[in-house]
Length: 378
Image (cartoon, rainbow, N blue to C red; front, side, top):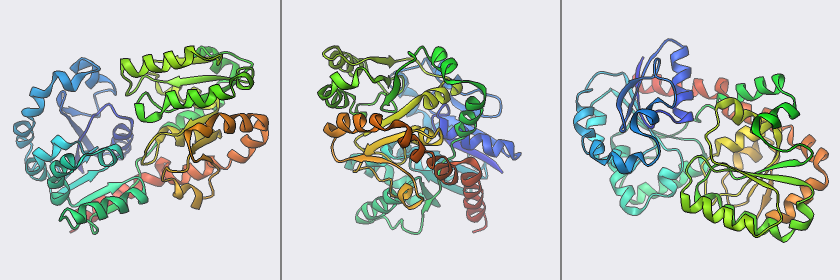
């Protein structure tokens, strides 16, 4: 097959799925509005950001977005499959051009492209979904909500909605890092202190991670937590200058020990962070199915999440999670977990098998092959 992904081609999910198809001998290209068409077999991850100039890129390349329709028209009939990864509203403006690229057209909803979309955004996205042969999701709860929502908007999408999880190849990197590095070596590489339990707070720098509220809750039990753990805030991806400063201001008013990570980590260091963080606090406002959370589960660590997040599939599969009903409960629950950490880690070890069966490449890649081939046969 000759496949085109319309996406941010530096994204982990897109690269993982593209890599799986490339390994099976398929030809895979990407169209990234920042830089145009790329052969994903020869362009390393991160190259698009370097070429386009890095952060803030969409503010600087809106003129390129306006030219997207013309550039995509030049690819008419050139591919067997075209797959939009993350359905940004402006892709809807190019729906007819995308439909003409290949006989099979798939839209992959990642989460925030639906959950955070305004009514105006959804009206712009609607032509994509109406013209697509299938719309894929990582989470059945979000899939069902999406279908009801767009049915009310006049689109009958129930027969198009498919559960096709995106692969997380970093699971392999986590296993390799666990065999290669001991804890002390990993802490040295990451620049984190030894002798304290590492608690990772959030999975990226977006405001929906509720970092300041987490700090407030932690500070309520700070005198007890400060001697037990070191907090890590991974803020490289999706953060704003104002958001990072608000976090720093909140932490400055506490006695908590912490590290704010503002640099992008290569895959191996991401794996090491998952392995040394015995607890992950993942209480963002909304989510489809956090990849970083799954990585922590693959590392056998304790995950504390929100009861409002749609992770029922983990419960059905036998996963072990701590849940709070409000972010203000986080501090007390972390203290409870740390009070019996060895037993908690033993209980959480079951999560390795659970997430491997749900999102490991061996489980997910065949779903994509079946989906594409089924649509080709129609």
